[in-house]
Image 1: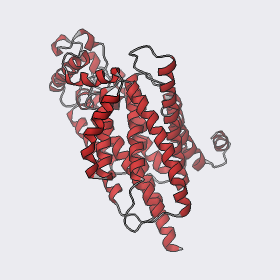
Image 2 (image 1 turned 135 degrees about the vertical axis):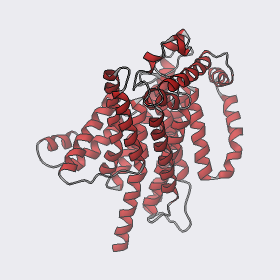
Image 3 (image 1 turned 180 degrees about the vertical axis):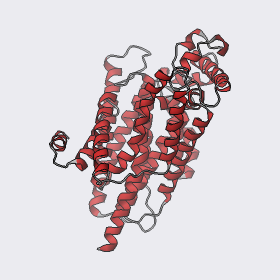
Length: 422
């Protein structure tokens, strides 16, 4: 990485190496340090722009990116009409994270590039999980919700849920073989070490997410597991309730109590979420077109007419992606965001189902596609209970994961053309 950066700055074109190295470093720190993760993503952004200007790359994006572009444009309009434009425009700097999608497609040119990025992500998750478990054993006080390297335990839960769901997709897709598909002997020798590594990461991420005691993330991962099992073996869904029951019975008391609190309105956080929903609907009715402006909802809902309790007023959002986006950016912007979610899911489904043209490439495409589908499901379902899209750590990792299958598809197509010409 450092040598690539030095040669790039010295004027010797190493943009290709710098781009993929910086993106890999960003993924390596994605679950460890948001500052380093975004810093390396910024370096990748600079390298990508230079390559575009020099004609070494084309601007390539999947279709769902254009829905994100509409969302970004409407967000800027909302900022202009905001109750506090300065604050809203400052918050809008996070819209630059959307460029992670074309950066991934520009960076990943070879199969080794993609495997390197996946290894970096796995390494980040392992370090995060080990730290979370170690902190719980050595330092955590009774009932403490472990946040590991993140600024908040809900951010930790959200980012662990993304990795855990993605890992589920990687693992289960690896057990699916299309009719007539074969695996080279050298490739077969790598399967079990890969499964062991991702299985270890999955177990550590499972422990990390449980230690956050964040119910929305648990539900999101449960939904992701349903999606993965449906694609793997639909009949396996019948055993899911039994597995959930056994897991609940084996869980520590703190996790059982937290899980059961989902079903009672005597829980203070549940009461607050009902208040947020009611307040959010009132704000949407008052500001339907462009909302109150990004990052201003917490200013507006201090008004007594929105009915929030004293504790609820101390929060900075409405604990729901749908309600928050509509309240602060308007209903039209919410529709653009939902178009992004829907188009991403549909494109990933299509990428998953596409017939394999190359055995190795097809397997890698399906693994990343199912992983991305699972991660998107976990994110969307958890977002009913938490404004997880407002966390830049989560948004950045989600966008990178969503772009990986399309890079894998292009690698597969290139390998197929090479085989046909040989």
